[in-house]
Amino acid sequence: MTTPALLPLSGRRIPPLNLGPPSFSHHRATLRLSEKFILLLILSAFITLCFGAFFFLPDSSKHKRFDLGLEDVLIPHVEAGKGAKNSGVFLIHGPDEHRHREEEERLRNKIRADHEKALEEAKEKLKKSREEIRAEIQTEKNKMMKHAWDSYRTYGWGHNELKPIARKGHSTNIFGSSQMGATIVDALDTLYIMGLYDEFRDGKKWIEDNLDFSVNSEVSVFEVNIRFIGGLLAAYYLSEEEIFKIKAVQLAEKLLPAFNTPTGIPWAMVNLKSGVGRNWGWASAGSSILAEFGTLHMEFVHLSYLTGDPVYFKKVMHIRKLLQKMDRPNGLYPNYLNPRTGRWGQYHTSVGGLGDSFYEYLLKAWLMSDKTDHEARKMYDDAIEAIEKHLIKKSRGGLIFIGEWKNGHLEKKMGHLACFAGGMFALGADGSRMDKAGHYLELGAEIARTCHESYDRTALKLGPESFKFDGAVEAVAVRQAEKYYILRPEVIETYWYLWRFTHDPRYRQWGWEAALAIEKYCRVSGGFSGVKDVYSSTPTHDDVQQSFFLAETLKYLYLLFSGDDLLPLDHWVFNTEAHPLPVLHLFNTTLSGNPAVR
Image: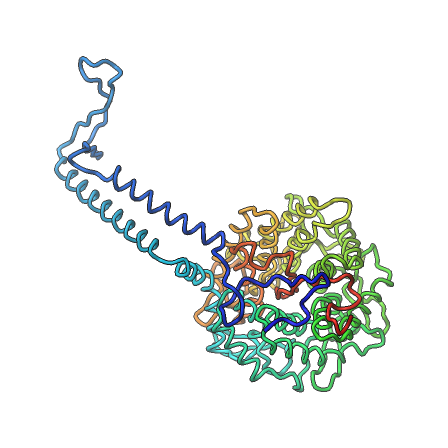
């Protein structure tokens, strides 16, 4: 099966992901750098042990014994008649010489046995094929994902998420009242990338048989878009299985009524059956949220590209045009916009929750267009300049953080969600104005360091939901309601982007620390759970395995310890739920690359 409409105007096909068994029509990747390194390491160990066995194993026929104990005295000695140049040592033994010699013999035998065992293990490793070694490496890297998926498969199959301690399904209002299998859809591409093809087929089978969008259920437009449409599109592009594209389009059609507002700014919620929309009751006088209506562009452009229907593209471009016409206080985008009046709500600006992925999608719209969507790039650059001027500050202790603008003043608090910005700054460094690529790469690194400190200053080495920079308190949560960790991915996401662009080993080290902490404190017998207080050495679990843990956190960890040839960033752009979508090589962003649209 071939991917329809993936031929760019130049005639060059998007390079396929080097993953997958023959049944998925992809070629196996050649041994990656990390695997070659392990082979060399095994060979080096074998050679070293051989030399060690030959030269250094004690042998009573060749070597004099030097037995040191409390009763022994080591003194310098010069042999008579040979001068100072033949200086050496001699040993005066105490009364327990016989006991020491027996102990020495026992130790020598143990050393020889250990060496022989290590040599045999090295020989066995060398006998294994590349495929066997690769399989062992994959098994180690996949262990956390296997535990999370297998637990969900056993205790929560078909439900949106999992309660790993109660061992039953779980859901929240963002998914509505129906069992839509959010974890299955969200995890599909992670399974595929990790080579867990049996699990991938199980998920595909459930989607074919059970995923139904004609239900009387009210869902979050934003969450369903990034998790379901994004997840289905990524699964389609990776596997070329047509069912995923079909389901993505079916769902997108159900979301279109949400745009039926006086301004074209979509409602936050929509009923999949009736098409009736509404906004969250808590959102500033019935406003829509910047990070929600501003995080549709990537998926909707791909929908038009694949279907030939420009309606999706037109919906998101209308949002962009409206935002361009609006005044922005201090150049900043407020988090709330009323879809009835077209006016800003409360003047609250954040690069964390409520605002975050809007800025991310401006940059990624440019990247996804093969860097031809200059309008998106200009909006991103303008926004980042205002953010840097008004929100980014340095603490007394030298930590760079991103605060929040509320009603005319800066709140010196940074959320875990805002930690994604370190990766965003690094990703957007190339192509920045006034040749400031180095500046933005360094800014990304500073944000990564600050977020790492928020982890390192806790008892569990996991980061809190938000942390303050007031007086003597830096990168630490103050309120109890901000001390929880719910398996979020943003810090590890930033580590991965900075690793890709710098190959500085600190990012792998920090990622490994986070992985160990998650394994130690969040793993339970029925999956993985968030914790309620990262400052307590005996944490209480929240009993929720979030779908984004499988979609994002575990995927970014896996990519952090994989080679750069796995999903290269010049061919793939990740949506805000870490679902990879291919770059579209187009001359412009007005129409899709599908011949039916052109």
